[in-house]
Length: 375
Image (cartoon, rainbow, N blue to C red; front, side, top):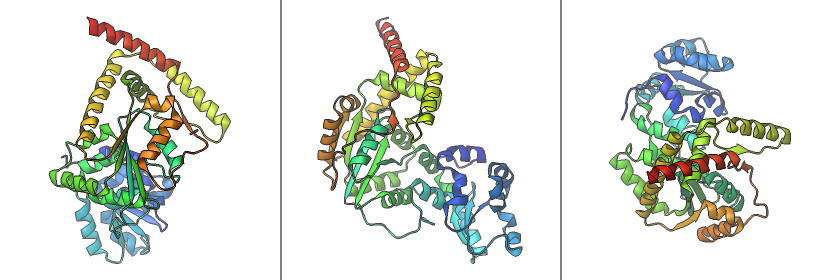
């Protein structure tokens, strides 16, 4: 596990959590207190109106003396050396102020979709109904989860094991990140009327596997047994189409195209997307790499699920497309959740990305793959 971090690697690792939203996250005014050697690197990245709320640890006492650091505020402590040690020292030195950890509290609660000021809150009641949508990347899970959200108490199953969580866990000691606290906080914050649903992408689980230590692994196994989730396992049978979808998304750096309320901007976005997409150059090596990785990821995920003594309902993306109403009804019957019903409107704001360009890339790759296999 890496223990030495620089600010660029840190900000890249937690970018998807929008770290500088710390200045607007809490109802009371919040300040970011950082290691002295981080201040000059952070200052130009913070919006000008928030720069006075960025304080190097060494300047905190003078800020308090000149009343630029009010008592009734939240002081979020960022240290890449040891957040826990910095927190303890500051709490002892300034007992009149409220200090929380930037990673151990703020980022933990934000990634859990919790508004908690600190992660040291009381335990939430366990959900009575728990389910997870499991799949590999680009299998159609976003579309499926949108449909489930419309069918199950307007409860959207979020994807929680994201790259930022993997990053925080990899550097858990200096950043004071506790994945067990995060997991339980996530369940408590996202449970609605006794129901918790989530989405799990196999590739991220595979990346977590070599990082997790034995104690945390045993804890997770115990928690999953206690929660006893039902698993909806989504598989995209055409691995070439799935791999081309991944290739296109990576090339465009755009994973989903959504409809909005403004039809003009929708049309402009769609036209820009199609234009950029048409300029993608076929790359056999890149698609082959995605294809081989996708096949391996599916096998790993299948292996993980096979080891779980849990009820699993397997569906295919192709089956979902062919019989949307029937497939969704089967899922709802399997989950057997309260107040779950097939919605009258089965449309979502997710625009399907597969088009003639995808078909062109798929056909060409399949031909090339067949020729290489025959050679």
